Image 1 (cartoon, helix red, strand yellow):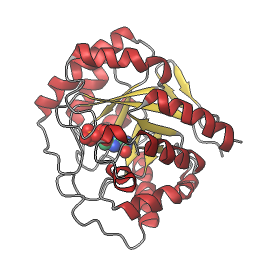
Image 2 (cartoon, protein in one colour):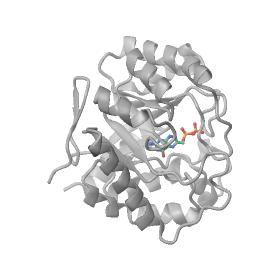
Image 3 (cartoon, protein in one colour):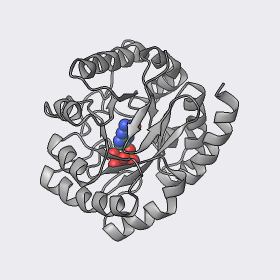
Length: 279
Ligand code: HH2
C-alpha cells in the first residue's frame, strides 16, 4: 500500500518519488546552530528568499529544543514566530510552512497566520490540546519520538533496544492520531532527542524498520552534535559534510523528508542519493 500523499494548501506531496527538503528557520536567540541569526522579520525573510526555490517546506520555530535549552512562554514564542509566518506567507502564498512547537496555543495562532503543517517534537504529549487541534484543522502533522525533556534529555538516555522502542512509540502515536481522525501524519525518530551517539547511529542504520508504519518518514540530522562528535567539529556550521553523509544514509533507509539548515547543499545530496536509491 502506498503512503498517503499530503495535501498542503494547493501543493501535493507524493511520497517515494523523491526526497523533500524541510528548511529550518529558527526565530530564536539560542538555537544550537542558527540562534540569533534570523530573529527579525527582515533577516528571516532574507533567509527565505535565499532558499525558497530549493525548499519544499519551511519549518519555523520560536523555541529552542536543543539539549539543555530553557523553555520559553507561549507569549514569547508567539511574539517571535507570528510576524515571521505572516510575512513569509504574504511573499510566498504557496510554500508549505510548518510550525515547530509543542504548544497548541502557538500552533493555532501559527495556522491562522498562514502555517499549514504542525511539527511537534513531543508528538502531542506536551499539550493535550495539540492532537485535537490537528484533528479539527486537518493539517498534516509530524509526530516525533523524544525521550525525556530538552533540559535533561541528554544526561543519561537509556533503551533496551532503541530501534524497537522508537518504532513502538511511533506506532502508538500514529494509532492515537488515527483514532482522533488525523489523516495525514509523518513519523520522525527524533535524532538527538534523548539519544546517545550509538542510539542515533542505530536509528539511522535501521531507519528502514519504520517503513512498515506506512507513513512518510522525516529525519532531522542537520548539524547535530553527534556529527560534531564523529567529525571532531565543535561548531555546528562546520558539520555540513557530516550532515551530507547522514542525509545520504537516511535516504538509503527510506526517508521521505529531511529537515536541514544547509538547503542548497542538501538539495544536491538529495538529487544524487535519489538517483541512486529511489526505484
Ligand atoms: N530537531 C530540532 C528541532 N525540531 N523537529 C523534527 N520533526 N525533527 C527534528 O529532528 C528536530 C525538530 C532541533 O534542531 P534545531 O531546530 O536546529 O535546533 P534548536 O532546537 O536548538 O532550535
